[in-house]
Every structure is written in C-alpha cells, then in structure tokens.
Image 1: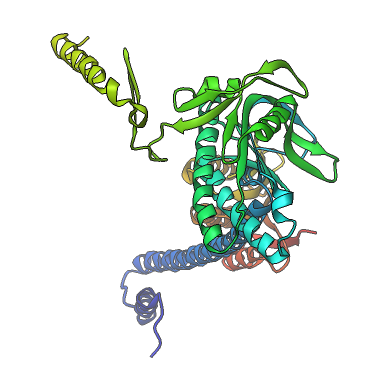
Image 2: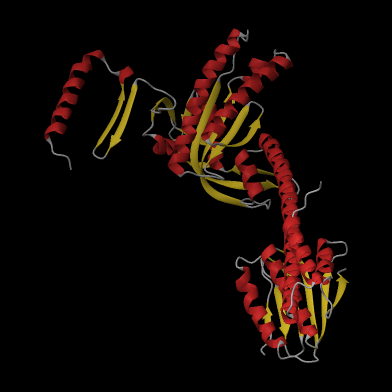
Length: 346
Length: 126
C-alpha cells in the first residue's frame, strides 16, 4: 500500500465529483455553486502542492549552498592554519579578513620591539651534528613561539638563531600594555629556557643555548616592504636597530631594555641601570636597564608582593629584605595599619 | 493610473508597470522582509486597473531568478488575476523569462497549466 501526502484532500475531491455526477443537488443553481466551490478547492490544493514543491526546492538549494560554504570554510581554515606557520597569525588574520591589503604601504607606529639571539651560536654549534642542531633549534623555536603567541606577539621573522618580534601592530592593547606584554613574554621565555637547558643537559648537550634579549619601545615603520610581487610584512627604523643593539649588550640569559621601555614597565619590573650606549640611527644617548625581577601573578613570584590603591602603593621583595631591617619594617607596617584603622575612609 | 517603477533591491524585485501601455514586468529576486507589504499595494493597483479594461492587449512579463514561498503565493495570485482578466474579454499574454532547464522553467510551465484564456510564452535568457 502506498501512502501519499494529499490522500485526504484527493478523497474530498473524489467525493465532491461523485455528488455532482449522482445529481445529489435538486436545485440546479446550488449544483452550479457547489461545482464552482469544488473547482476553487482543486485550485487551492494544486497551489498548495506548488508552494510545497517550491519550498522544498529552496531548502535543497540552501542546503547545497551551506554545504559549499562549509567546504570553502574548511579549505580556508586549513590554508589559514598552514599560512600561520609561515607568517604571523595576526598578519594572516588581517589579510584574510581584509583588514590589511597587499599594497606596498607602511605606517609609523609606536611599537615595542623584541630582539633575541643565542649567545655564541656559531661557536657552540660548529662541531655539532646537523641532526643535533636541528633538534636543539627546533625545540628552542617551538617553545619560544608558543610563548610568543600566548602573549600576543607579532612574530616578524627568525634570522638564523635570532628572533624579531613586536607588539602594537596589527593589534594593540595600548602602548603601555604592549610594552608590559613584551617584557612579560621575555621573562617567560628566559624561565622556559632554564627548563630547556636542564633537558638539553640531561640529553647530553654540554653547552646548551643561552638566550639574550633586547627590548625597545619607539616609533617604527611597519607594513609591507619589498616589491609588488614579493613582499614582507615587517618593521624598520632606528628603534629596531636599538633593540638589536640592546640584545647584543644583554648578558646571557638576560633581558636588557631601553629607558623608553623601562618608563612604561617600571611598575611591574625590577631593573638595574647599565652603562649608557649609542645605537646606529638613534641620536640620543640610551640608558639600558637589565631586568632582575617581575611582579606577575601568571609568572609566579612568591616573594614579591605588589598592590596598588589610590593613595597607597606596596611593592615588596621579601627575598631582599635584610634581617636587621625586619623589626623597623614591622613597626612601620603596624603604624600604617593603626592609622588606617583609626582614619575614617574617604 | 500613474505608472509604477521600483528599482530592484537585494531582497526585492524590480517593478515596471506601465498602465497606459498595458505592459507590466516583475524581475529579479523576491524575498522581502514583509512580502504582503511589498506585493499587496501592487496587486490592488492591478486589480483596479484590470477591472476597467475591455478588449485590451495586456502583456505581463516575469523574469524571476528566485522567490520564496510567500512571494510564490502572490505570483500564483497574479496568474489567477491575469486569467480572470482574459476571461473578461481581454487579450492577456504572460511572458515567462528564465534560463533553459532551470527550476524556474518548470515552475512557470507548471503554473501555466491552469491557464485557459490567457496565453503563456516561455522566453529563454541567453
């Protein structure tokens, strides 16, 4: 037995036609009006069938289009994931969304520039087997890239053993926030390096890599540089050179920042002033600062306490407190507490 | 009656009604947000105009790329109106333009099945 969608409606029409044929209407006028109503009913049924057919077709088309879109999205996602391994993910995203184009256009922007390299890379690796060198470099770059992406750095390029990254383009959280993110990233990288060094030693590498980092904040030209056919999204300018110069001056496992960066991050770091230096393309004298500590919950510093309120800022490095000062410190703190409890708020 | 000219929009048809020449055309895509609000006034004007026609030659062209179900109800209603206008003693021609073997061809032919007084002509684009 077959089932059809409009069985009931068809039955009504059959019955209606049967009434007319049997002459069920004594009044010819009533029969005529009945016949007209039946005709209209047939027409309505036909139109209903047409509308349903159209609706089904439109739905099929929509599903087919959705399928095509889904396939295109999958291809685009795969392409984007692959491209993000060659280019900075932020740049890929900007290109795919159309925020950035491929014209040879550059902008002047205040960026925080990060430069790093491996101390004595050539000397350390000259007697190394290529497989060992590949292992060390790949594990080093993989770990550092993960940290860079976590902190939102735009990875410009790897140059041999060196890395050039920047904060502030194509996305920025503000000049100060960008500088802070860069310094936090640098500290996280050096901490990760210490763990990597242990792993490398355990695996038998006598001279594990030691990274040096230089950071500077200043106006750079950022954008597409090159030719119409082959270009790089990169940064240039004296401030970039200064970051490289700071990196060369940094101690192994150290982070050296310029006074411009220090001015932006001094609330979250402890740093020691180092001898002044000059850099190519920079007229002014540079006072570098070597970072010795950071106040950062994510990076975990149990001996550091940092709180800031309107009218009160506490920065305490308990590790550095002298035993003989403890009594005086406690006394001062108790005085402060007593005053705070006495004074009405506001 | 004043002619009606409405340019096509992303979701609605282009309308070109020349009442004096008795030529009417609807073309494009139809899935306006409010279908009755789009078609209702047009159908009212057509009903009013056709009711005054006797022995007239009327040409109504459809060139539809896509229409949703509520729009289809109005298109079916227009076919019905044109058929009744023909029955009332007018020469009514419905021109249905579409791509060959497209869904629209089948749709037009299917709707034309009910026509007895009005004439239906398919015109293939390209």
